Length: 332
Image (cartoon, rainbow, N blue to C red; front, side, top):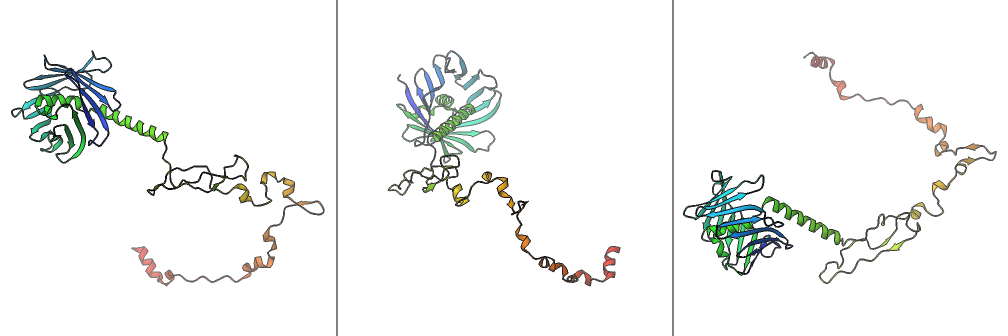
């Protein structure tokens, strides 16, 4: 039997491919979007057993799934992972999922209906947690969260085989095992997507259309102080109204006036003025500091305010309160 390719989309069919499944008579190979093998499942029809193997060492068994007329038993061989049992109920139209073995607590109820399969968490008063909806054309299964009209989590498209193959309880359990996402799988997928986005942003950084397109002044220490250079003008807009190049040429302090413009003509840095040149020199050679502008104010004008009669202060409103009334408030 030739392997059948099953494609899983992270959402609807228009969304990106998240996984690929190579389904054949010998087993299933699960690949990520880059076609790297993530999981390997091997079938043993003679004993009704499916095993999950290590992709790097296929002789190492990670999990074993044993099918019988009562349902399926999942055996785990990793520390910290608990086994699960899937038992048929209601004439095979329901599956009770127990965590921890045959006597564990019921975690979920899987119900087979006419237009799909519902998954209900135990104790949610019949509220559907997830729905596996079969496409009318028979070539896809849509996984929705929260009910029949909930958000689409995944869309699994079958090429070369019908999706109706997995309507039967035993076949659906097999399908459920090799298509389920563990917490580790989701964390790895998120990390890969974040790394891909960061790498794409670093290779082609986003450029702003609001770039200053005039004459810029280079920062101090780059070429002559008064030298200016003209940067590339902003490109013309495309026919649709959007800028053809949404880039910005960033030059530190490019929009600041040059140092020469701030100092004015004939000026020089203060570090070049000597101490002797700063002090005032009289004709007799004495060295005195120059007078300030306050020395031009006459002495009478300075002390005129002190000779004025002091202004009388106005009584405040509290002066109108009788003394006895004030004392009465303190005696209470």
